[in-house]
Length: 188
Image 1 (cartoon, rainbow, N blue to C red):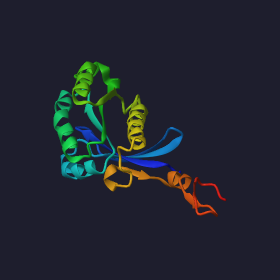
Image 2 (cartoon, one colour):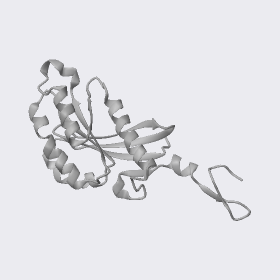
Image 3 (cartoon, rainbow, N blue to C red):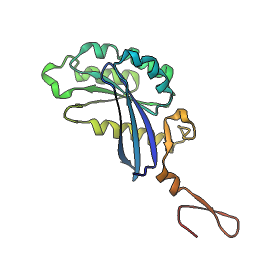
Image 4 (cartoon, helix red, strand yellow):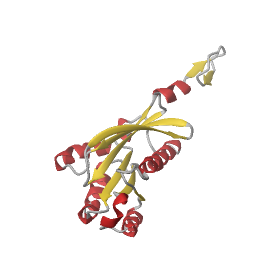
């Protein structure tokens, strides 16, 4: 399927390894999210550092049932901020909200950490898919707004953003018979 933009995401924290993609719609445009999840794999830590540089967004994830994953957030965030673009959008995610009975980290603690570090925050459950789509949409909207404001250099590979075939096709410039330029994908 054609898309207007591709946003590269990285998932960081003490949990999972997987690569995936999903399509979402923002402002009537299809956005493809390329998701690199190397979280929790110490062997990927040095590789992860190079991924930071090419990511437009990051989900900083901890497990609400494991206090130590929350305690490591500061280290992950420092790593992310040191190795990524200052424009990268970072959202704090408290995962496993479906396991309320085993909770070790209060929602208020996650909210406070996010506030203190200038992050957006959401609790999700990968198992039930609760708030997962919302987390991606919220961060993608923030990235999209930064593109519109000219904050991201979308021509740079380091931005983590690529212009897709759908966007390129609608922004073709044609020269009319007087030598002037016409924007749009319509013919003649």
